[in-house]
Image (cartoon, rainbow, N blue to C red; front, side, top):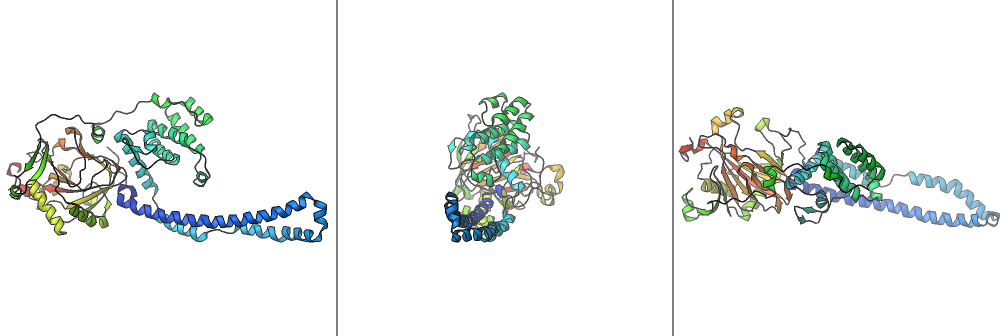
Length: 477
């Protein structure tokens, strides 16, 4: 079980929407820094011109001391320079440069990601690597799950990812990232500005090797810097993939079955006239996927309604809800009667499921950001902890999950025990029953939202409660 961890509400990395504003802020800061550099350059140019003039005059005297100093004009000029010029040069050098720009950058500090944000972003990258079995060098070159993107990780990026694994005591992966950072490191002036040097990487890498009980290699790492033997990491085996990870990678074995695609005409009288395309994924528990059940216009309106109120998604109920590392996304709740669109969507849910949604929860719209995911969990409530809620409205009998976007890579909904993975397809919806015929939680419905490798994943879900189904599904009650 992942330990719960309180994090700040900003949580930039947990949604694409949050990072959009961060990118705009960085744009302003880059322009401010550029103007500051221009002012510094103007100062440097003035000094260069002064150096040229001073050197020319000084060389005239040094090359012919007597002839130069015999001339009283030269003698006066020398005395004047040494008394007046150099005093003012010293003052000029100590004058603050670009104070306005520095103040502007300071003002933006309050909008900057915190240490917690950096840890969350590092964890997101780590999650992608572990879930999809990505190679360090591939990721560093912008290759994600076999596809090349216009992106890369520079040595300082690799260092911080490696440091994250080190802090998590995953020394195998930490060593891989440090080695990659050292191989790619090139000394540059701007690295001095960032206070980041090769010795920073080497120091942590040596510590990692000591944790791996490799003192000799640790000493070699310090002495020989980047000249490392290529097969050092092979001494340590990679952890085996879990069913969850295999599902996220699309590596579940295909099953030969009689399940197939049909047109649903039975769950609502309306469907007799306008049947919905449906694929049966599982009979026990019941699970189907509907295609083309939400239009682009409806999707856009849902996202527009959700964006102003997106907040870090939590787990648990009401006052006891909390932010945890195992769920990284932002969500917004939209009431059923918010607009004509939400009314239509809720009617469609009735048609798709045959359930009465009276007393059910509002629509929830969720956006997943950098490596956004939701670790394995159940949608139904634990009876002992939620007896009051279950008594009033019943447990969550069914989940309806709409995909509002395609996701280029990653982001599947995986059911490890069923060895079933559903990959996002814009406009589709997956429906499953969370409870068995005795209204007890079906343990086979354990599921997870896989990390997003590339893209922005938007979903909308509806949790349907059991008590309202007394006349719709009497066999359940």
